[in-house]
Amino acid sequence: MTVRGPAMLKIEAVSKRYGYGASAVTAVDNVSFDVAAGEFMSIIGPSGCGKSTLFHVIGGLTGADEGRVSVEDEPVTAPHPAIGMVFQEESTFPWRSVAANVAFPLEVQGVAKRERLERARRFIALVGLKGFENHMPGELSGGMRQRVSIARTLVSEPKILLMDEPFGALDEQTRLLLGEKVLEIQQELKQTTLLITHSITEAVQLSDRVMVMTFRPGRVKRFVEIDLPRPRTAEVMTSDRFGHYVAQIWGDLREEASRGMAAQEERVRTHPGV
Amino acid sequence: MAGKVGAMKKKTWLRAEVGASRAIACLVLLALWQAIALSGLFFQDVVPSIDRVLFAFWSVLADPLFYRNLGVTFGEMLVSLAVGCSTGLAAGLALGGSPFLSRAYEHFLHYLGSAPKIIFFPLMILWFGVGPGSKVGMGVISCFFPVAISVAAGMRAVNPVWIRVGRSFRASPLQMVTKVYLPAMRTPILNGFRLGVGVAIIGVLLAETKLSNQGLGFMVMQSYSRFDMPRMYALLIIVIAMAVAFNTLAMRLAGSKP
Ligand SMILES: Nc1ncnc2c1ncn2[C@@H]1O[C@H](COP(=O)(O)OP(=O)(O)OP(=O)(O)O)[C@@H](O)[C@H]1O
Ligand SMILES: [Mg+2]
Image (cartoon, rainbow over all chains, first blue to last red; front, side, top):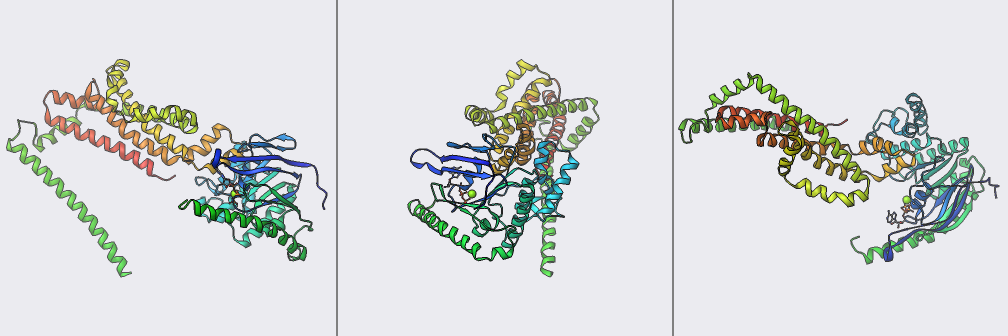
């Protein structure tokens, strides 16, 4: 077990429901955890278990029904300056060029045009899009657009990086390479990182700790400490211990994922055509 | 390759055919018009012969008074578009941005928006007089509603992810409007403006023909009351051309890409 620093991000007994009465859905139920300064933590759970809901609550975009989120003991009630978010959905601005998209957070902060374009260019190169600065998002592939939104969040160099399935639209190779890049930046800036993912290998490859969530209501099922040396080289990733972690998490997840699938089948049976 | 050339040939041939068909239709209509004018079927001058309309057309174009009145109508149009579009935009943003305001007031916007604006004309005369003021008033209330309705609906249709991105980077309310909402709403806003231009023209010209002392509508009615039919037709042609020009301009604006 690694020694963790003081808590940077604290989630205390957070619950969130959608809807009222009989049709109410508890998306997140009594979830608590800390993320230490500089820690890389992943959240993994079946589709629809409430990961994005939790992500929005932590980012200060939606209020929790119960519980609280705090950054260095400061309660989060609105988007916090220390937090940068990468969204699961396609989120580039189609009316802005790649460079203008990436420079957006700096523009909002009032950074001078020269400087923000320079900084944007650095992060565009970092996600492998050098040469596409003046392209419009509509001219890029889905995976390239997702890299633009990753660069857009990285450029503001947030102390806490929240990412909701940021590599979801990417192919395996790009996903691995980009994961390494993000990890490099994270280590360099000592960023506290919370990654939501549905890839078990990705979670084990990148994280210090993985949190597995249950399917509806979304609760904490288990924390898995990933006690593997860094950097996570190909050698580490092919080791028995790596495989052991993957198998352990898959065991937990399998149960929840099958419950999720069953719930969806049930829904199709009882609400045909929905 | 041969097939492609053949298809292209066919297409240009079709276009030529369309043009020819239109030209023939025009000629037939003009011939019909001329025949009726010469037949004496109608009371004298109700359908003046084409040469007399053309002559009146030239004399209108040579008349300095025409240009003064054209300027008045043009000015009324511009002012009512500026005021109607900007107030409509502001109201649309307020309604689209606040579920409360929308719940409280948007019904009225739809009711008033679909009412014929000419019923407000007496009020406009009372408030702003018989001069250009009341015409601008009519143009503004015509333009305001379609712009406000279109902007409000467009604002609600903005992709919520873009809003979340803006908020997550802590954009101020003003930055949210200028950097997220307005660019995201380009199409509905321009569509609203386009509809607004169309009805503003109707509002202004209708008001001018009802009661006024200046403007193109006034000149039309003046010719009518003097029973100067050739001049009236000539003016109508000019008014229609102006309306078409404004509408085409607005359509170009709405359809163009940045
Ligand atoms: N705005 C909303 N209104 C009502 N229900 C919602 C809303 N957003 C999410 N839900 C419901 O809450 C539950 C959790 O959704 P959430 O998006 O957090 O899942 P997720 O874990 O991110 O799934 P995925 O991995 O597929 O992205 C789902 O059952 C969903 O139907
Ligand atoms: Mg999600």
